[in-house]
Image (tube, rainbow, N blue to C red):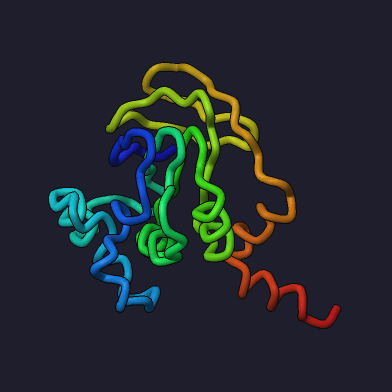
Length: 162
């Protein structure tokens, strides 16, 4: 069970998630400080660690559109958050997979900030309303990369002698 900590609309860009003026900061240990920096109240709460790891950022259509900056996925991942969105832009999705950011594509999701959700293998259950929403699962190979913690840990696991 996880709580929706922010509900965002459609077309949330990587510049909203990680503003371009911070592009000189690329280390995964430093990028979280600038996550949603222009949403100052939310950013302040993130930096204060007001949210449990596994908490949910809820997005609409085209989450992560815009530039290919991987810092956007890195910044969210630094807090251990999960993105549940109606759909996710292609480049952001690949960056999320590569970095091990948990993403769930749920085209019909209906929830509000503060709602409690359960993420199951084939659906999202809104415990607050009792409604269920089917997910669009990632291909098994892509999910395996996320489950391993990203492309580098996945590759290391695969390189281990049997």
